[in-house]
Figure 1 (cartoon, one colour):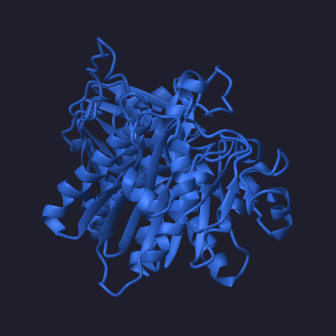
Figure 2 (cartoon, helix red, strand yellow):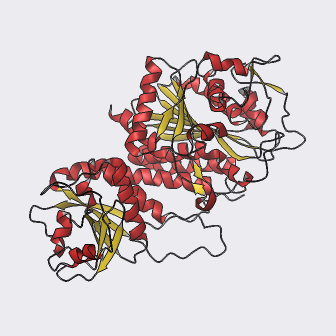
Figure 3 (spheres, rainbow, N blue to C red):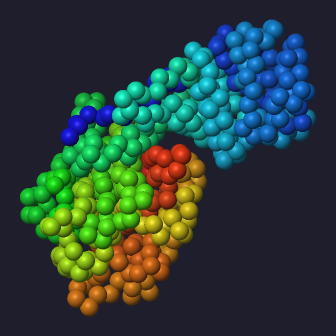
Length: 521
């Protein structure tokens, strides 16, 4: 199997901030491209006014070539009196009151950022100066939106084609115009945004690789590479990979039952980022790492089964998050735990009706081998007790039922309902709102556990179709009694189907921001 990343990296983009001097004159900015905002009703932003000495921008608006609606764009070239080769007009929506500057909320600015990135991706410009940050309600969020949008527009997943598409357009250097008073804050935001973008890129690269490339061994090697790359600078990152014999010695009967039908060796991956004080309890991220899920003996339908290479989306997002915080040298102790294997059918495969003993000692009746994610996660959730964690968040493409409940907009968030767990849920939800990588809290409770009762074992691994994502979370919850815990079901948010098929990189933004906020608390 391949042991190096085979999906082509996106085109490199260098980012910087440019302080806005009191006497700044955008018309004299020598750049291949300058991006300015315009409003509906044919009104100009102050930056656009500075470039409109000869009336060319006003004429474009008057002609109706651009409406000014949020996300509308127009490229103008070689304007008289403007040093920049190109002027990109981007719609900001409704015009502000006279002599005011409109401020865009995070959601609106994200749309503006995405439209800007799409436009710049089509240009053969060496560099660009973007002034749109001057119109953001939240400067930090604006920088993050622009960096992530520009990096997303440059991402490619055709590296395994015999003739990958040759991309000749796109901007290689981007500067953001920032008020001088905000320069220090902007630089911090830019550093965090670039690290976040790198983490998202890794997550997408891993998830987009097919199962014959991205095996459990491949994920383990990726963890080792993260440790090797960043340990030289910090000496606080390490990894440990447990093989089948070591998992057997730990009595991980539930995890190992999923591996029975596969020839690929399972890997239990532990990646530690000990950036905080030695005495500080770590935050633990647990990622489901099923590198291909056929359903096992409870075989899935053939249509769409190729997308089951994404069933390691939880593992990919955890590794992407760990890469981001390693790059930031985050002053927080964080441990990633990834149980990884394939779920395949053969003569040795676990059968419906089989009973296995988990690492916790609880016995599980496996009624459906396609409900395997909870079987690998439950042993990982027992394993992490040894770290005496401050909090544990597991991340998994766990249930189709979550897609039925929440669609593709929100990840499902599950945790116990008490003060401590409410605080953890609120931290995660706030990080999601801040980044647009949103989650929605779902209920769990003892009433749902009735569906998981078994006549023959301590618990069944499915509870029927009603409330499927909730009973899955309730199954996991019984293995988390020793610590504060939350579960993110990302089945609806980790990838897209159809013409836009591919990994989204979610919920790296949510997780990384959650950890950054914890480190600064």
